[in-house]
Length: 199
Image 1: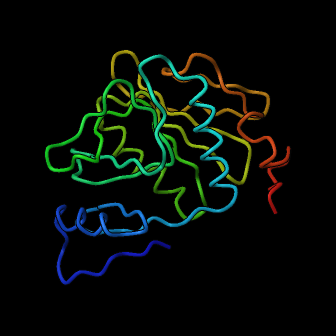
Image 2: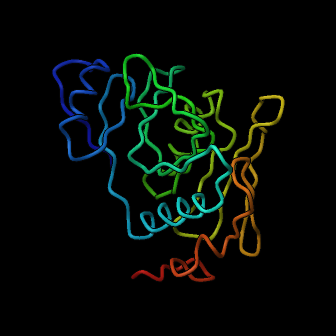
């Protein structure tokens, strides 16, 4: 369940930025509505940090991994979005109206939870895929051991089907110098059957 910030009218992006500046919680800006980001489970938070760390030690020169606090501006839908992690190559590019938002990620990471899985693999994915710089959109399950990667082809189109990786597999990303194994992602977080080791 997502909480919305109650305003007497549809919010403008300036309203969103003002609310976000003074808030202890992160919010997204979706079609004029300011939506609070839900807190993550133990597994969600551990996986987001784990994959971000795996990104960090494999980063190609000129690229950096960013935390979930990095905001993104989606021009195609006029939305303000956050992700569970990202990779940006080169200097971050920002729109004129929001100096803290970025428009040029190379990789976006989302850890799926039961309440956000549909959005993360539908509307949110399409929003991020509209950014010309994005090369891969990575979805990590938090209640099973699999990773799904949507990839852009060299011609600039998104492949019709994502690649899905399971136990024993490893996956590469265009901004990383070597592959990540599924065991590195899930070790000490989920057991071989997908049950949590944190509870």
